[in-house]
Length: 186
Ligand SMILES: *[C@@H]1O[C@H](CO)[C@@H](O)[C@H](O)[C@H]1NC(C)=O
Ligand SMILES: *[C@@H]1O[C@H](CO)[C@@H](O)[C@H](O)[C@H]1NC(C)=O
Ligand SMILES: *[C@@H]1O[C@H](CO)[C@@H](O)[C@H](O)[C@H]1NC(C)=O
Image 1 (tube, rainbow, N blue to C red):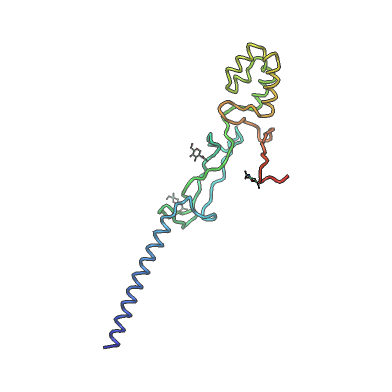
Image 2 (cartoon, rainbow, N blue to C red):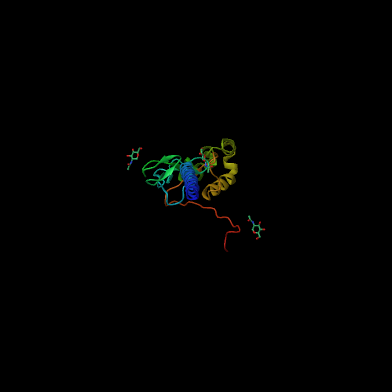
């Protein structure tokens, strides 16, 4: 009688353990399939190399907020977004920083400013018609405005009015502004 009781208890314990382990397996499985692909760890996915547009020398598809979307593929046998990936399916997109251009050429702007700046053509080209008209009517503000604009364009301080950057050759004189902050050693 006593032995039988012990047997009963052990059976209950085994049964409870079985229930718990099943529940655990379910929890783990749902946790794995609930992982969003964006939260995968480094090494669980590969991202395509950015495609460089040969006409602008910038990442193609660069948006106005200076970021481009790059497709990323989870590796083979990785589960995310409730899906099993095989290594060649796109799981998510990653934003990478880039330089937004909108067809305004640095060389063209500089040449227009040098030869036709006294007529304000450089300002018209860059999308500032009011200042362009002013320069046109005053022969480049008696040449001083034309000279100032040439210097501003040459140093890439004056940019196209739509907030884009100049299209510059790969080996061209691209100006990168550096800022001094707490992370700078000097
Ligand atoms: C830039 O804009 C695009 C949509 O135009 C958006 O999908 C993306 O998240 C934005 N990137 C950043 C870094 O704000
Ligand atoms: C992965 O899956 C996609 C579609 O589900 C299929 O087109 C592709 O051929 C598969 N690749 C491999 C390597 O199995
Ligand atoms: C730079 O460091 C100083 C002092 O260490 C601190 O007061 C200041 O807030 C920091 N500035 C920034 C932008 O982190």
